[in-house]
Structures are given as C-alpha cells and as structure tokens.
Length: 130
Image 1 (cartoon, helix red, strand yellow):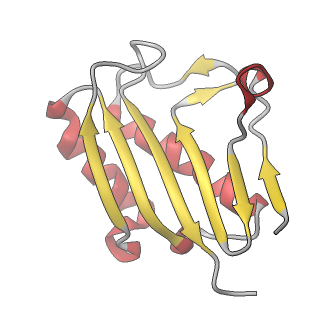
Image 2 (tube, helix red, strand yellow):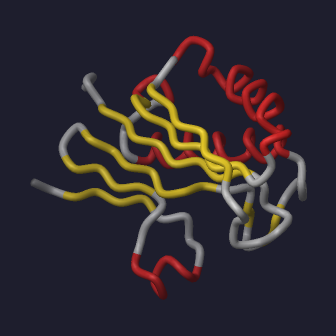
C-alpha cells in the first residue's frame, strides 16, 4: 500500500526520522503537534491558544493528505498542568470537537520539549470519502 507523507519542514524531522503526518490507504496518523511555528514557541504557557495552534497545524496536515478534521477518530492530548484541563477542553470544543466527538485520551505529563509548551496533540483519522 502506498504511503503519502506531509512534512512540517522542521529540521529535526530528517534528523530523527519522522513526518508531520502519514496516510496509508484510508488511515492517517498525525505526529505529536505543539504550538511551534518556524521553530519558535507561540503563546508561551497559554494552554487555550496552544491547543488552537496545534489544531490548526493538524488541520493543515490532514488537508495535505485529502482529509478534514471531521475525519479524526482519535485524539491523544498531553498537558503539562492538570489545571489547564478546562482551557484545553474549551479550545477543543471551540475547534469543532463538540461535534466531531472522536475517541480521546488526555494525559498529564511531566513536561514537553520546551518548558513553555504546555499542550501536545496526536490525531488519527480515517478517510471514508473521495
């Protein structure tokens, strides 16, 4: 089966050996996505805004593989502060997940790659449309 990939252009993709998202048949996996733009953290320590940025990056990656946010069937959300849960939940609802309603796991973690990053999101999608 063919593999189609989308890159974010981050230099560490080649160094580590990964891509932003990969599609094999109808299945798409989106790598952990944070609020980084051009290697810089945007909205430091702001869980609501960082969630929105990550969702925007995920949306862009899905579009590059012929998918939409509505095709997401699973989200994994990693947060560094449990107290941010309400803000992350609000950003997810505002980002359309009130209606998409995928399976979801939210996990509190010790930290992310940069201490100013407080949210990271992975997504899986299944494309069942042309």
